[in-house]
Length: 129
Image 1 (cartoon, rainbow, N blue to C red):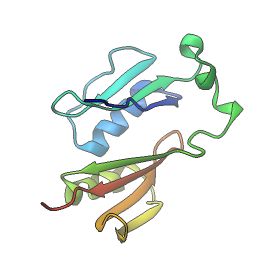
Image 2 (cartoon, rainbow, N blue to C red; image 1 turned 30 degrees about the horizontal axis):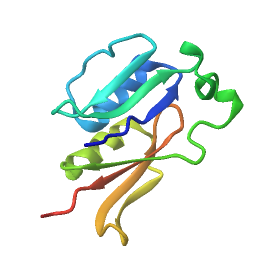
Image 3 (spheres, one colour; image 1 turned 90 degrees about the horizontal axis):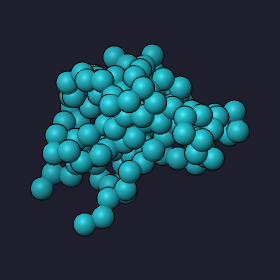
Image 4 (cartoon, helix red, strand yellow; image 1 turned 135 degrees about the vertical axis):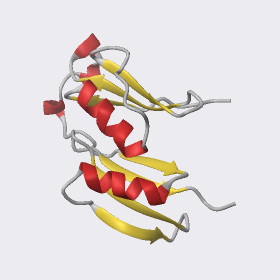
């Protein structure tokens, strides 16, 4: 099996960690490090890594000033609790980027919002089996 670890640069690891845990309906916890945290699924699968800008001198994570965070990146999550995810998302942002609608390609409902660092996040329902 192969898995990807998507890592995004963030200004506040603890704050972003809490934001994503709220979005996914996970119990609140602290990231393992001040400059790096992993959002995990209930089975331990890494959903998203949050990396503080400038920590560890990774060339593409030095500063958001070298490019707009999220340019060319769409964080797309499929969830099994879509109906509960929507009110959680509304509680986190002043407005959604896209209201709930049916995606004609996946044939599932989805909506989009921006995270605290400006990344575009889409939440999509898992298809009904």
